[in-house]
Image (cartoon, rainbow, N blue to C red; front, side):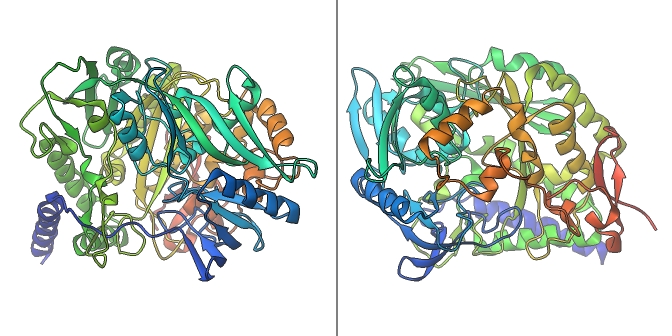
Length: 587
């Protein structure tokens, strides 16, 4: 029977691969993150994954959908006059933390869903001004019409301009001004509360030359300064990229990571630590006359058959219940092998992959997300994390380790893997550890120095927050090691609560940001308990209760913070002894 069970699991995996390899022209689009009981009133809001880190339900009195900056001004003025709390929500609401919540039931959500227009273009100056609800994909396409390109951006194109500005979204590069989108912005229009004499609203046009303090606060704003309405980008002439993935063992990765980003403009690394492998992305700019019409369509961002995705999720749940990681390790190796064979979704001509290098124009090689290209099909296919199906449900831990400390950090992770080689298969089943390069930014809440960003995605129980995970102590130790030992900065749009505990102390210009916040929104109408906590203004983000460490709401200090009834107790870390992690202890 065990042999048959293993056979069917393997067969199911490869059926999934075969079915999912098909690029579906039609899939069910993501749901609106805002749901209301009566028209646009009595509403709840969530993120694209259907759950915040603390699994709370965020409520609001109503949602407004302005279609012009004038309508947005009217909405903010009315709410300010009434003293109502406001938060901005984007089309797809991809931020994992509670950045969209108003805290109070009589608060107002302001959606930028219909603020999605091009405002003006200036091909001679190489600038493009768009409204904040424009998605990254639309921004890339509009720039391409002018034969211009945004040089660096996140790999997922479902983010909006306002969302990227709110959380400091980035791609991977140490070149130019770095990989953060906000560092290629020259002007921001922001709508904030005003005084009675202002008509309860104020529109400010910010630039680095005219008002640098406000500008550097607004470029990574967390949504606490008001509503960004328009953004002007400085672009570059269109260029091509030449991409090759190379797999090597990870023996010297800690040394290679320090120099690789300087050797290749769009370099990143994908680490498969339990397999002892690393995938190097050799990705460089080439002239437009170099032959090639390549497209980067990242396979995990394509629409997938819902029934197959549900079956794969069931396999993972079965592994978790069994308490054994062998199945995850087998499927992780199969998945990695498959993704490498198809070059992660890169094609040489928009249809098939014929070999390296894959050369294509910047607008076709920088970002993807075809599961958003969709019409309603009754959820037969969908983005694999769509909460309406039984699909992916995960935690994300993402942080930037200073480049000078990366070598020691990688060595510490390797020491953990040496203790238990199977421990990090749980990451490889979610495409491994993605490592992207970032640089220092003038934004007050941007990156402080050159760093390597580590992105970890791993299983989360959909039904029970008190359910422990396989080898969760290893992931928790990596998380605490990065944040506490290596002083890593968390990504504002990802992460569990503990990543933000005391984080504002890591930013040298935090006080300047808070001064601007006080000027633009003195009554704190765009602030919430959550934003006050992460900005160090009131309390902290940790929630201490039974089982709180299982979902990153706290760092355990006693066994009850783990799952003692299931054999998970609070213990010191294995490599970083100062860590306190939920460890499975044999009876």
